Image (cartoon, rainbow, N blue to C red):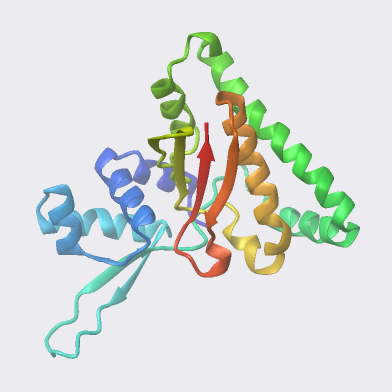
Length: 231
């Protein structure tokens, strides 16, 4: 297990954290030069940041196959598993796997209860953030609400885009880094429903939602999960 202090110190660097977020959102492999160009830094600096991110297990590094001969370069891509911090060590992933198996064995009724709980937890997460920051819903502008829901899940990657239509405002947002990736292969039939219920709870805590529809899904071989929200 990687030392949690090494993980936190690595991600504490603003440029390095921004590079990690960029790679997560694009879901592509990047060379050192490509990262250097995007962030306007020297390739040697980019290589250092990428190596440190690889050392803590949030990126994978593979040699680029060009077929042109010469020394192959490395390509860096976000790992599917990510990393977990625990002080002291706890095996929460195994516990989660047990709970998902139990939920699946209990059948549709248990899953419906789970969706209601996740929806409530989504609303509570926003309410708690408002309370901690001493903010009131009555005084929040639309831009502040969008910033708030984006900030609550920066690692997941909410990127809301607001559009004006004849029927009112609509929002499209994308989840670039699924927090439940490890469980999808085994329990995709209900994990996505639970996550969607949580997200819907978050949005309905802030907006008057008239529509909440998933339009892309990683389960169906899409790069991201994206949603259309009428507000």
